[in-house]
Length: 365
Image (cartoon, rainbow, N blue to C red; front, side, top):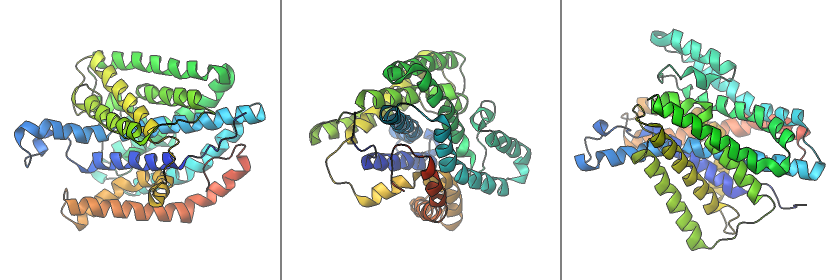
């Protein structure tokens, strides 16, 4: 029986960087035509860097699958089974309170010129099906539009404990591999239909089965084991992971503002990005080095950082020249400040209630 602590502060640090990648993805220019200050020969590459930052979402999904699977495996090992109702209660108390706040803010900021479309979006969000809304709608200007990803997360949380109970702990690796195979097949089909990479393909739940499946596999094969690696190998894994994200966006069709040209390129793009995220997790997992406490704390409040960041970018754009470095720094500072208040002044009340449903200790409150 494994007695290793399940909480790994290094993964909180990585969770913060997942958010920071998404933040950069939303504040930096994503198309070559918007990079007039860059030499023409470099514009496509620089735009690909910004697009690659979008894989911070992929890293979020992979980390979520990894951490949740480890908790469920530990519960099965230590208690002999899973209380699925308790799992759902924990997820509700962690996600729903801030999610409802986000929906309320978004509804209050509906743009009258696009009101019908945005109200329809929030109706989908209310049923945790918000990602499907964007299959045939473009991104709108509402600062809570990024909450589409919470729908994907909730769909995963709904299914995982049930399926894991059915297949058993010993078949968890097969479950993850199966999810990846089905995801790859879906991506191939979507690419061959020449769907929009940045919307229709990106928001599809099946698209992110690669990340969720990889997280399940990684959690299963590492459960009860310690990853031992020297500093040189860890640095190499981190650099390889970052390079893979760039290749996924620049060479393949993992993340860019265009229609897909082929199923193969879309599959290779997302597979390369997921491999890059696995490398980033391995680069920090079980590290013996002391971690900067501020980064651990920022990772702990990463849900709030994600929920409020686009609103902060909008506000900062009214306080400093839009698109400027000053506006980006101000937006990041505002995001951190609001997320900190949200976590310690609001979310922790529900986290304390969640303790009644905890069977295996994970992250401290």
